[in-house]
Image (cartoon, rainbow, N blue to C red; front, side):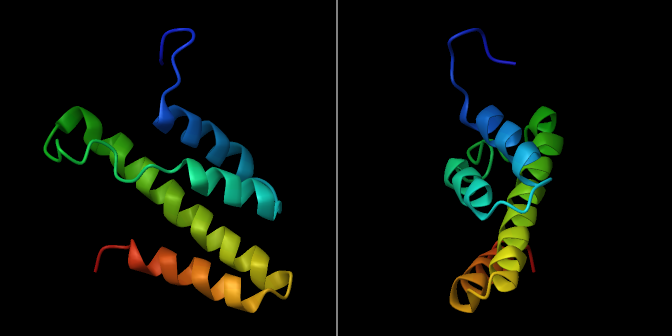
Length: 94
């Protein structure tokens, strides 16, 4: 947890993701995805203390992209649904 007054991008993303994933709000998903700053601590890939959190943040990102794709599909916005789902596929390890 960050000290009072300090904004930490990963914490903001995690909080927004937890709120958005339980909704069918397209805007909430899109706003949360804009908070995603990429892989957590990419310069320290072997730091054990960050491994679980890195994986959790990554899974939330993929889940939000997938969820957004499905919501957009339900809304009939197929081009944007396909884009979101392709982004989800692109970040899943092969």
